[in-house]
Image 1 (cartoon, rainbow, N blue to C red):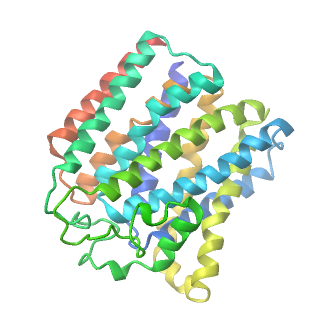
Image 2: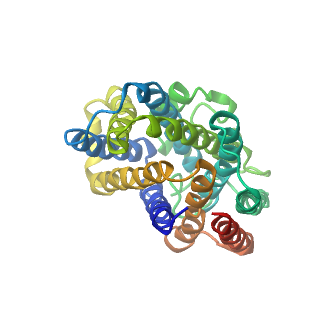
Image 3: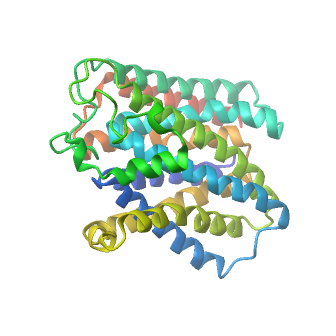
Length: 334
């Protein structure tokens, strides 16, 4: 990877952690992702007016990717409602690079060299520390993290059932991940690990890995990376706002107003973050780009500690060190 590509991916990582934090900070996650989706769709629609259409061969992966992005958003909403930002975000992001490496080798025939493979493995190892740190909390409620999206008294009834409905309808995860109200069964006084939250975060990572590889194929076939970005953001951004409109109806506008600025800003940042990644995928192999992008784990853990008052802890520090070491190995190999 060239220094320009590295800089673009690192900027995307920081931007991605920022928009995720903005979304997590909005208590009602359906409202948060309605605004993020709307902001992304508006940016995509505006950009589409000035750039060429993607080539015909790019439309099948583009449409498939839009569907995967909706699944990803539904899973991300679920994980954010059930766990701390500083735990859920690193797990979701950290799962992706290793899976992308395998998928890229199988479907795109991009075999990493020794340095790149070692870097991806080392960076992904940071995930283990974060996940194990999350499992240590016997006796803690999944909603105990101060400032989390499901905080403020830990009352599950404060989260609208429509959020769980959209999760189930879009992702199909249903009660395998959580109870009917979107909160892990038996939560509140749970004496065990936060398995439902961890499951949702890992599934989010699998969705990230899937759309990363699909987009790597699609954006290279598009002929116009900006055209691909515009239509992807437009199509994926409409799904959750439409669902929110159908379920909340007249109450939606009043509910959106207090958090509109934060949510729309998050949507604009999401377009910028993923646009930079898609551009980088046209100029570098998929696996190193995916792994370097997950340096957002460091930013996410820091944001969780600084703004949501979540404990950083030595495992998160160790995970950050492993991540930096993995990135150094990947860049040595390129």
